[in-house]
Length: 506
Image (cartoon, rainbow, N blue to C red; front, side, top):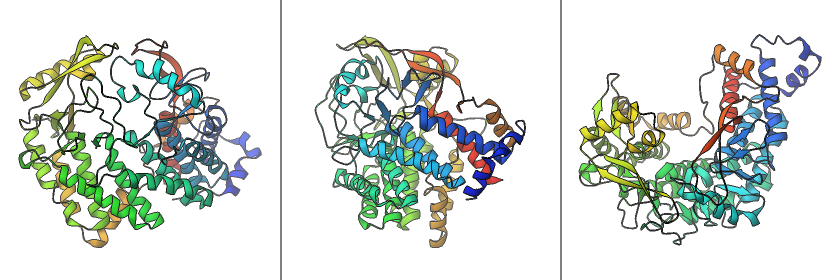
């Protein structure tokens, strides 16, 4: 990676500022934009080094995944995102100030690390108020967001929360070799090892809880969970941890996670994967909008992780489930589009392999939460539903009644064939190129994109846009958001990454 020395940064930080052409793309101008944005995020937006997701321009309102209190930060999508961004900037510029910003993010995560070693979705610096927030705000969503309905007080693998925090601490430690950060890192990795079931799988949350059954469904948090790449992210992290720290336990646990994927694959004529499994390794309900079913998205992601394990270990057993999974994808296609891509339903019923449709019902449960109905349908009926959804302006219909996935299945087959034929030396190089990256550029940076970003950044260093903030009234069921002028962590991250890629490519 190309770097710019501290001497160069000090030089451009002097009287040359006044001579920079504000209408041209120069390294100096890009570096100044990055600095202005990072300084503002760290000094004005940050809360003890951490971040939520969405902010109004005047910082008077903010949200995480759920309505956010001013005392809260999000682990995933907020604090780990900005922490990794600061490290990206540091590795490009060699300016130690960005390393200090990353350290504050690491410190915030360590503050919120639970005694067992993992993380909850969010960190609240007013811990005495969090139960009231759950009771009167987080649990009041009319549809969805059921993971916030109760405060378990334990750690989660959902949404790359514990894995993402651990991965950031691993990266920060490897960059700095600061011994103070090794104990919390090892504590987190030990937690991940402890949480693994004997068959190689992981629950969604740990320590295990069974407290919160609702709407006739058992508590799903102890189920084997692949949803949102919970196990895939865990395996990838453990492989990196073994590479960096050399503890064989991490490699063994990662491989055992692959063993779970092998034993949880569906039967021969439905050799796919579900989002969650019960203790008998059968697809099962999780949240009320997550019925038992074999999932296209999760099947593809599991195949990718098995390929990752093969590339890292050279063990062919991790490739053996993949041909049957391709057979299932072939048999489950709804249609082939004009561009050659295949279209699939989101989920398919076990045994019948019929596409599953969702209806959002008018009925509500006793607490006022809206209910759903799921039913298998013929693929032609599902396609009709998809056409109605695409032509509809109704947000609920667009979100719930039907969802499909479209991708180039033939290209996927070509890529897997390429991986399977690699020799030992090539396997590791492909692994490092595609799987061991600690950050991924969001988009290719061209002159037009960079110029647009440089011209649209505010004086504060943010990219203002119309954002949605939860419009909540404590104690009342609600699903509404209000539009305000503001900015998001995701936009700041994406835009600075584009600028960094431009610097590294030129």
